[in-house]
Image 1: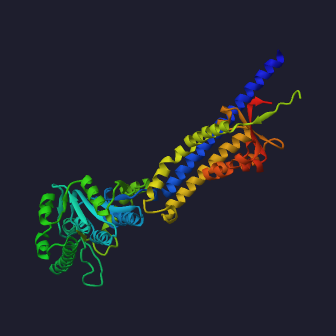
Image 2: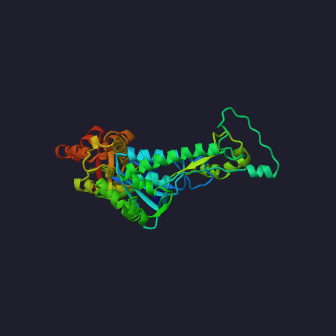
Image 3: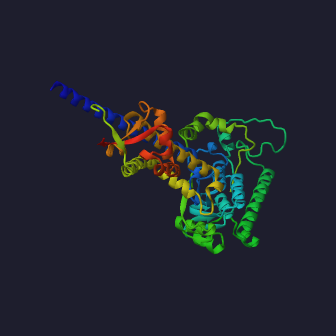
Length: 314
Length: 154
């Protein structure tokens, strides 16, 4: 009787041990499998895509480097260029869509993006959403096709230069500003004094030259008549439907139409999409929102070692 | 003869069914983690590209995935057979792996299960079943192990 009970207990123990071994092995294998899959996905994730269309976001004012901006929605050309390069290098990406919602911005940033897009071996479709004006239109014009809503704001082919004139403020509070410079034009754009007529002329000449290049690029990119483009390049913005009439836009529509156009240009049978957005880390968030005010401050901005306080935008 | 129990080598059909059960378990357990990833990886290879001329990163990721799945499958069979003498599939059909020498070692369990990492290797290894007695695969001969059926005693 006792030996029967012992034997029953032993059998129970053996079964329990078996169960523990089986469960442990299965759990261990599952954990290793799951972890390995995650590691491989992180390591190769971007390359593991089927023939796809990349959507590169250009949202907010265009700047060279996003760390210099106060707003969170700015698009830095460095980051966009990085995304375009990634899309160019990935052999599985067959076409690129520029998702544009930007009023334009820095001249060089806009132009360098425009150049990269023009040189792209893959078809590029610009999809203008709410706004794709000025510098953003400069970029869009280099794409193979431009898709926009009939009410999108676009065009605005023009250049502006602005600076803050604080000379009146100093006068009001009887503050004198002294600066020693070597070179008669070194103080051009100093916000603490008014521009001389000669300085105005110099500035205007430079802005006119930028406008000339802008127009020339739009003419080349869009294959339009130079006189016609010069005529409409007053800085006026156009609604999508007006832009279409003027030859500044090719197709009315949104994401669906942009994807269809890119698919057609790349001869793709399937429609896989990969989105490249400007990545923002927690560190970026804090540096963009707080460090600007804390670190720089308004006073340091005024006394910063800039070439000029004049901001030129397209 | 009292006190000695002899078992006959397991019939092939039982071994095959046990293998199918094990393969299903591994499929669910391991390959489920990789299904999304492998779909992406194989989807990345266009119709015109073959593995050898495909994009290196994709080829490499497919090779790594295959290796990980193979190693995990090998672990499943080897550890369970070494610890319990049977995998889950074998448990279902009351089959045991036994050593011809002494107690089954991990090395023996490992060697006899290597072909299960690849269907081609397993097919080649199983050709021996047709030739040798006691239904032994090549790797079972090398590892000096065989599978017995404990439901049938001599």
